[in-house]
Structure formats: structure tokens, C-alpha cells
Amino acid sequence: MPLLKTIPNVLSTSVNRVVKGKPRPTWNYKFHIGFNLFKSMLTATFDRPIEEVQLISNSTKISPPPDISINENLELSDNYRAIAQIHLEKFLDKYDDVLDPKWKDTNGQELIGEWVYYNNLPKKHPVVLLLHGGYFCMGGTKMIRSFSIEIAKLCKAKVFGVDYRLSPQHQFPAALCDVIAAYLYLISPGEDAGFEPIDPKRIVIMGESAGGGLAMAMTLFLRDAGLPLPCGIVGWSPWVDLTHSMPSSLDPNLIGLDLLCPMTMYRPKPRVSSPAWVQYQEDSQKLADQIKEKKPSIIGDESFQRDEQIQIYCNNEALAIPYVSPLLAESLGNMPPMLLQVGEVERIHDEVVLFGHKATQPHKFKVPQYSTSNFDESPFQKPTSVILEVYDDMPHGWQRFPSAEQAQISFHRTCNFIKYVSLVENDLSTEKSLFKGTRINSKGEERPLEQYDLDVLNWDKVGIVPDLTDHTNTKFDI
Image (cartoon, rainbow, N blue to C red; front, side, top):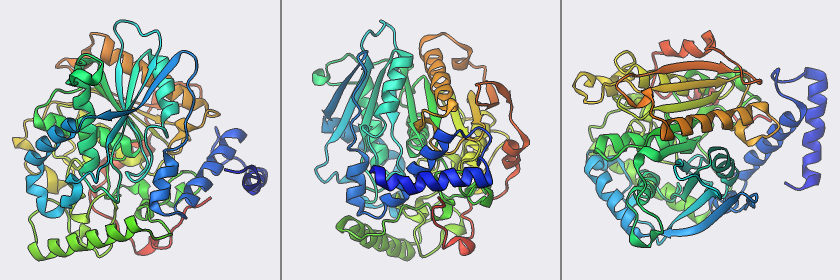
């Protein structure tokens, strides 16, 4: 952002701090300025055509420090996508009537990956498959390169990222297909890959925001398909409920405190039309008309039935597919050990908290009822080991702001988890399950979860799209 354009934002933030005080107790001046500047930039992003948004969001290159190397622009063979597609088709055939068949068409887009690794790797080291966020419609490996570098350095690891296909041009499950293909590339590489097959017991799948939700969805699919599972999963504020059904998604008390606007208006909608957007609208409407005509019997709720599409990632009738909204899966049992981190003032706070509890207590949290009625017949009833961390005062994406003490705390705790599940023989991988839910303060100190965190466990409208009547004019609040 040009320096002159930042001046009004800096001045208004400074005045507001004097008049109103700090928005949250641990928001120092640098963090507050950085937060508002980033939020302004995010809001302005959708003043451009979606194609331009996608290009800009993955164009900034960060040079690595001396102890880190990067191998970028790797073209993965189409074979990996083809194998992933075969696996997906077996499990998604029952949803065919609500999916855009164009997801199988790559339009000539290669699957591009990037390695970021610590130069002096120990013989035994973790491998992290890191999935970027960006609402499924923007971002890429370059956007999260700073994350990859920090994780590679702290964990003495290799980090692999992939530029999966983006919506609205590529609808679900195109992105899921691509990240599964990337995983297959790691565990079963071709002769020209330049490395030996990587043992899944050394691989941690990690993602932030939409990428965190994709990491959970991908691991759910690997479990269901009987494919080798990674040794662990990390979700930084994973977006796991695309119905926006949880209370925090609309909480008016969070206005001005989170990067995300109230979730019912979070469907990224560019203010400038473009060929890709026009094509998406035509395809989406065509699919919606076909669904109305066929009236397929798909698990979901009547609240999904509305004229406007809630997401640009899939049509409304697909929202309850577990690989779209992992929170709505029949069971989250039998998953690898997972670390979930979320900020106190995030709009997706509630879904992450409930997700962690549902994973570790699948017999107790059979929600929503419409997708868990056959839970007793599920082969996945073993509790999943979960570490759930709620960071005091933190908004969505706080790890992007180095001036927040909690950012480095998050990195260090993440890397401790990655090293533990990938390098140490531990109880997390045995029949014994573990749940640890903690609040983390700005000093890295732990304390029990608060009542604010636990209230959501009694929420009875999971997976039900909220009434949008009172929120149709909501915009980003700066």
C-alpha cells in the first residue's frame, strides 16, 4: 500500500486510541496500526476484478534468509490429479447432482508446488504440507511464504505448498482434488520428483483460514477413502463451517475487532464484474435450476434453500458435504492428532471450539442432527486427540503481525506440536486419546478455557444458515 494512502488510516487509528482507548488490552500501537492497514487493504481488494485479485494476492515474493532455501514453480505431473480425481469420484458420486461438473476441467492450469526448507536438515525431520487461505478464491504459495520460512526454520523442516485451483472459476471439489494430489506427490513421487517417498508418519498437514478448513476436509477424505493418514494436522483458525451457523459469525460485539466482516456477508463478491465472474454467475444459476428440477435427496437443511448463493465455492445444496464443511461431518473420530489455534475475537471462534470438542468426543457432540443420525453405524467412533488453543484478544490471521507477541507464541507452539507428532514416539498416536483446551495470553501462559469459549457447546442451530434479513447491508468495519 503506498505510503500516502496509509496516512489517513494511521491518523484515525491514533485518534481513536486516544479517544476510545485500545480495542483490546493487548493490542499495542504497532499491532493496531498494522491490523487496520491490512483490513483496509483487504476491503479494497474487491474493488478489482476477481482475476486481478487472484493475481495480486499471490505475486509478492519474500526472499529467504541465509539458512533457508526455496525451490519454486515446480510443475506436478497430471498423474497426481488424475489419481486424486479417481478417489474423489468414488466418494462424491452421490453428490453429483449438486456439483458443477466443470470441477474436473483444469482449463490448462498446471498444478504448481513450492518447497521451502532448512538448509542444514537433520536426517530425521518433519515434512509439512502447508495450505494457504484466501476464502478459496485468492492467495497461493507466495502469499504464505513468510509462514513457510518461519516453520521451516523453527522446525528444521521441509515445507511444501501448492497453488490449488481457486473459485469462482473452479468449484468444489477442484481445490480438494489438488491438495490430495499434492499429498500423493509427497507419499508416492514419480522418478523425476527428485526425492524418495515420504513416510506419512513424518508428514503434518497444516492450513490457515480456508486452507485450515481444507486441511481438515482433506484429512477427513483420506480417512474415509482408506488412504494413508498424516501423523498430525494443524489448523490456524480453520474455516470449517461454510453455513456460518455459529453465534460468533454474527456477533455485533466483534465489529471492528476482527479482519472478517459478519459472516453472512463474507461471501467474497467483487464490486467490478469480469469474464470469470459473469461465467460463474451463469454456471451457478444453471446448476441451481437443475437442482430445483431434479430435487436430489442430499443431506442438508431447508435454510439452504434461498435464491442467492451463500458461497462462491459451491452451490447452497452442497454446503453440508463434510469435505465442504468439516464441522458438519457425521463423525470427526479416527483422525490424526490435531492442533487447533483460534483468536478470542474471531468470527470463526465458535466453529473452531466446537470442532475440537466434536473431534475428541464424537459420541457426545452429534451435531447437526441431519448429518449425524446414523452415527451409531459409523466406523469412525474413536476419539481424536486434540489440542485447542484460544489466544486472548487475537483476531483472524494474527500470525501475520510480527508486532503481536502472540504471533511468535503461535509459531513456537505450532512447531513444538509438529516436531512432537512427527519425530517422537508418543501417546497421541496410540489408542489413548487426549484433549487439552487452553487459553493463551500475550506472555504464552496457559489457563483453562473460559465460559465464553464453552457456551457454544450448547448451541442448537449448528449447520442452519442464519436469517440474513438484518445483515444485508453489512460491510467491512474499519
